[in-house]
Image (cartoon, rainbow, N blue to C red; front, side, top):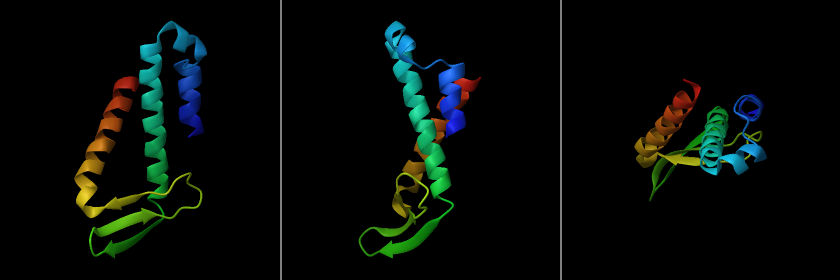
Length: 98
């Protein structure tokens, strides 16, 4: 998390000056940064999960890592959507770094 935040602050200069100068670019970079940080959190949270089943919603995994800011649940029926979301973030990050 700190490395990503530092990269956006120091290398990409995502700060108030950029916000005033080019608000559209600033918002785009902030969105990419926030999605990247979410991806980091989810990856870390997935190291510690519980697996269970709910009769109405089916099988799921739920993060239970106390070091993560937020817990989340992924239901088996939503896996394709989750994968698509992750791929979108990865694509944004690759475009930014290339």
